Image 1 (spheres, one colour):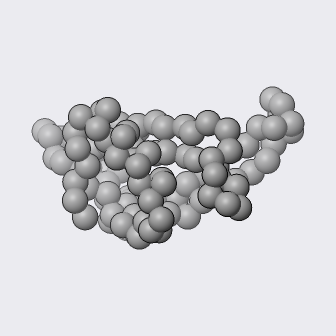
Image 2 (cartoon, one colour):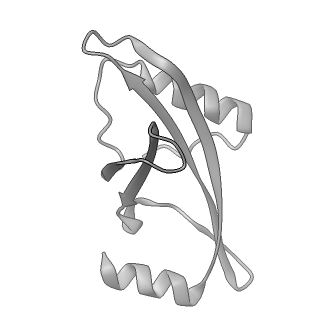
Image 3 (cartoon, rainbow, N blue to C red):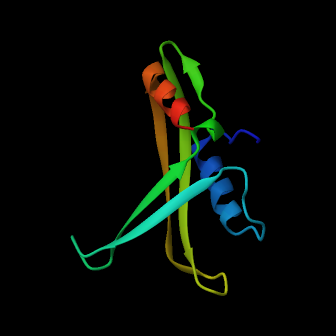
Length: 107
């Protein structure tokens, strides 16, 4: 898997471009669950995503393992047209060795 560009704008542009690709992505296995909630409002959803930790590349810096996870969420209708707006976010990871060991045992 090719590492993502480290420039925030370039990474987000690449992610948005991948969303519209006619090919399904198979580079990162992902399980997701969407829960519809009534509170704080009837149209609230919680999305839980589970990623295999062995597919994430982290870099060791001092006593930590650091990296980034970029997420883009897009809702499409049955014709492939976007519904509403997309949502993009980056999670900066700064993990201790203990967390890394727990994750690798679960994988």
